[in-house]
Image (cartoon, rainbow, N blue to C red; front, top):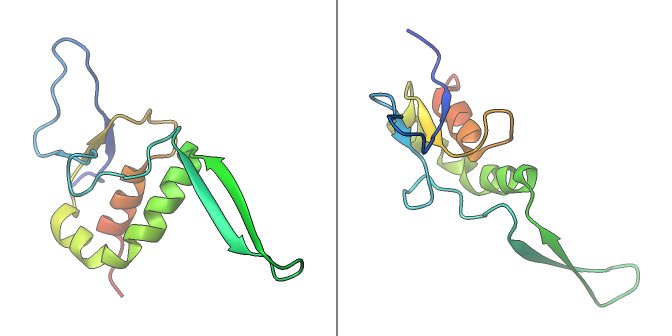
Length: 112
């Protein structure tokens, strides 16, 4: 059996998603709710100077994937049950970080 992989969706004429692959985009339960390019606000209590510190960050591919990992890692058992052994398709370029990589990792990890 081949190792499950991430597939980059394409709009190229004639391109078809491989049979058995699962689309993990935003309209699905597997989509990443943190779009690259959006801005998020971080706030924390500054213990040294008192008061609250606030900062805005533009979501990079790396940050979007990190936020996804934090939010969805606790659901690893459900992810394994539904996605183990399946190829996953999303629009991220294959040489860029992608939340589908997190899903592949969690779906196919050895159980303790």
